[in-house]
Length: 59
Image (cartoon, rainbow, N blue to C red; front, side, top):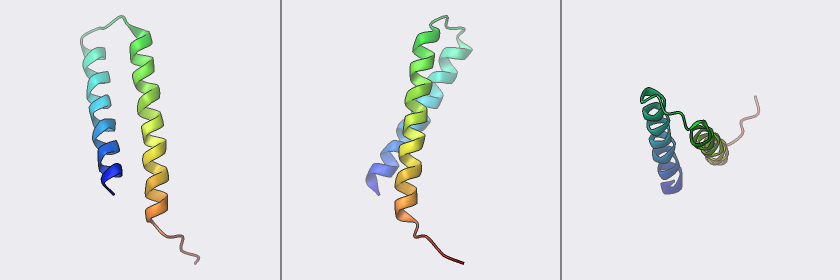
């Protein structure tokens, strides 16, 4: 549960960092791309952990 919270915080922080770089008109597209890829990996990890927490319900 703590791991999930930390991942969500990091995901939010990356979102803020990406927005700040874009707003500042950063021309370092490689850095922005790396941050976006990291953010997507975090999202996938968050989804996997959430899936483990929620039991499958067969209707």
